[in-house]
Length: 246
Image (tube, rainbow, N blue to C red; front, side, top):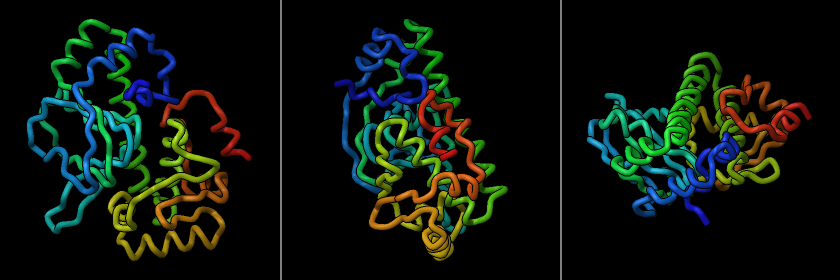
């Protein structure tokens, strides 16, 4: 079984040839498990590897002078955490684990050889970084234009669709081993505000988040509150539209 099997799964992986999938797999130097709450790469640190998240939840974040941390990306299984570090060489943000995470490590020298040998695969690796950029644009919209309820609803809906694409979400539910502080740092809210917002989502029959599990009770209504449209996720054709419309 390929450790890279979730890369672009549900988002165009079928367009990669078996030879390209084999070459990607062969470029993995090692697989390792990282503890929760571990700094993987620090801002300004020169990077010579990129990592593919196999299991767990990781994040990219920036620290403000007042000590408040702002998450600028949440990463789930199948995501290349720092592929953009290959051309940039130095990151302008920190990368860390939120939960225990299993990663596949790709030396940049192997990625360079892979891209030179397989230009079609190189374009799809580039596509992966463009999907990250689409996520960033949506996060800017969420933080800039939505209220607290809309922000949390949008984040939960997005994570559901991303996990469903890689087979990690069940029937309107998925594991999410994050704290309310983590959600606040992703949504620009205090933990107290997140607590009130989650209670409101539950009381209005939209979603419930408890004991590390999110249950979506009414996806169409939750999506409307979130002003959520999955187009920016560039998902393969599937039951997504029907789930939103049902």
